Image (cartoon, rainbow, N blue to C red; front, side, top):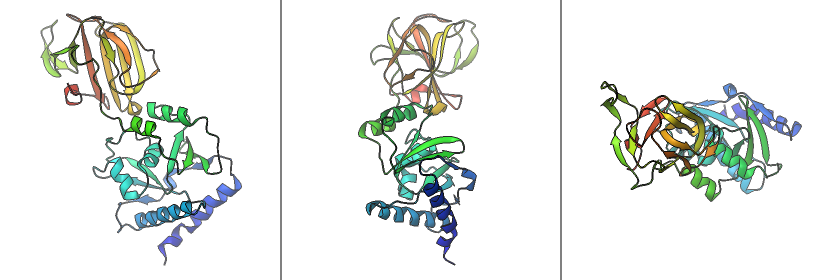
Length: 309
């Protein structure tokens, strides 16, 4: 039996939806997407996926309508976004915008990814990540064309821009995954490192979940990465005035404490290198400094391993 016949009913079903509802939202349930076990030619579904993708590129080249279908796959190894895109012959921005992947270095192991069969960009109208908001603002003036489709996948609304690629500005924005410094070089020295240390007030040995940058009061403090202001807190007993930024849709946060002044408001979108506050000595301190933390999945990470000090 020809294995490709297995997908004919699905093709006709999708075509029926598009012809009957050209301007309506197409509602899809990802539990019904065919699941590819392995991204290898020995896997029948992956082989079928590759056939469909190849046919779609030919249709696009001939200025004909391709068939947009969705598969899914659980990433089981250390495959990166770029590696995943190369195996599937689909642009990385197509996979990234569909699956809310915000960095080429993001760990995808055990992540369920949806694999579309047509190149393009998926725009989330109510996106919450910095990149989603940035991308939507850049294209929101575009009007829908016959080649743009609206989907609702598991209650997430997406607009698909067929065969569109990220602009050079959008690509640079997306690929910039390196962290900047919270203080300018030459303006600080590391006065306390990450890990166990003796509390200067109680004398007890406790975990220090960040690093301290000693600097003059009033020294500008910068966002280390594009993000959203999750919290602006004043007069905390320990941290004084402090800011928490969310990055990569909340998978990473950065903390800036003991500020003399905060330069942002809660929920604001900030860009890497933007001044968000100024060094101070509010809260429980022995002198002017910035207490800085990085957390991934809520777990404190050593900032010195992430920053180029």
